Amino acid sequence: MLIHHIAQLVTVNGGPQRGSRLGQLSIIPHAAVVHREGKIVAVGPEEEIMAAFPDEPRFDAGGRAVVPGLVDPHTHILWAGERAAEFEMRLAGKTYLEILAAGGGILNTVQATRRASVEQLMAETRPRLWRAFAHGTTTIEVKTGYGLSTAAEFKTLEAILRLDEEGPWDLVPTFLAAHAVPPEFRGQPGAYTHLICNQMLPALKSWWREHARGRPLPFVDVFCETGAFDLEQTRCILETAKALGFPLKVHADEFDNLGGAALAAHLGAASADHLVVTSSEDIRALAASETVAVSLPCTPFGLGEPHYTPAKAIIEADGYLAVATDCNPGTAWCESMPFAMALACRAMGLTPAQALAAATINAAAALMRADTIGALEPGKQADLLILETSDYRHLAYRFGTNPVAWVVKRGRFYRVEGGVKCTPR
Ligand code: NIG
Ligand code: FE
Image 1 (spheres, helix red, strand yellow):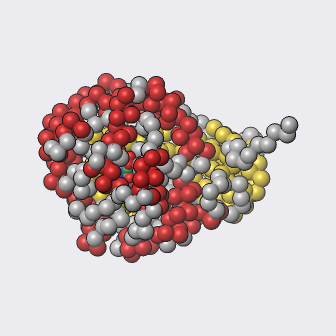
Image 2 (cartoon, protein in one colour; image 1 turned 135 degrees about the vertical axis):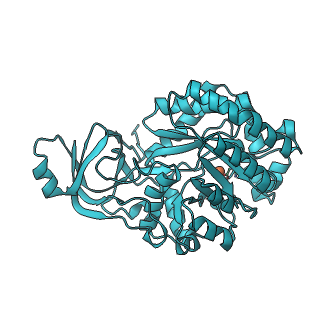
Image 3 (cartoon, protein in one colour; image 1 turned 90 degrees about the horizontal axis):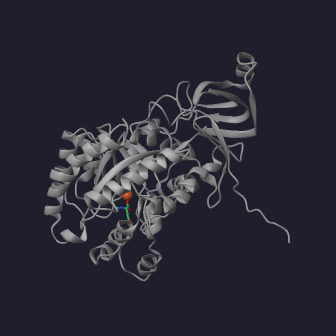
């Protein structure tokens, strides 16, 4: 298939973008792209491509902009229930960590998720995945972390694997048993850490071999935070996971600076995420490593808090910066990557070009998939978006409505019905 009549083809080629390179989009005006069997075959000026592929079936993009499919590298999108009441409690002055310490927050969702069957979890999550997909997310990371027992964590992993097989999307699983200390271990984070290291992680390895049909091992992540896991517990979990061969991620510095970001860099984690109260020393450690800094601007926005990831300092220090939604029922129920990008521009000072690179190639790097997704280059997956507009900047310029007209996933076309349909009566 040859897609032509593209006003701007934003390729984001040349690999992940560190420091001041962030935002180099390589835009081809009046362009066309050819894909076959789910992969990009050629990109270039329309005239050249049309001449080189005269017999290829054609699709007219209508003078719109085309960008790579968005990659959301941090979500907790699989859960049961909801927490609107806690939203209201926070508006009345309770903090997120106070609600968690009182047995609510993550633990509230854990209760609902433990009760739910695999089918029910899938049924509640499926519409959220479709909304993310309709907003242009073609690959999405999904964490466990609402089970917090071996059986319940494996149940949620099973739901993730089944939803991945079912959908047009690619789901990238992350094992986050270290999301909170479960009620059975209340006040004993050390004992729960011991369970994760000595039982859950080795069991995960065999479970994966039996159930995941040759897929690469999932990431292992830890919520390194006051009231969750301290730096030593985080180290113990991540070192054990690394020794077992799992790739790593860390939730660091969302509320308190415990040193999780520097630990992530030291252990060669794929990413360190949140990074709101990160010290300049930790930023330097990250920037000196290959670990991607994943900013989650929907989270402070969702919590109504004024502090965001110091994106400019990370860029100045020469680090890799990515953007994600953090979609979850507590702090940020947002399936829209364009909204996260719009926020990244306003609250973190990114340009639209930087926000797009952070949401594509650098987000792919945070998932260790920059060789196959995140850019429109020959050989990569044919995951791309045809926008409603001819200028890619509308992705971040607008907010609150969906700027995506078509999602193309592995070469298959999905028309987004973004507007309201009014049936006269
Ligand atoms: O990334 N910080 C920890 N986890 C999520 C929140 C999960 C929840 O509240 O359910 C986050 O913000
Ligand atoms: Fe998170």
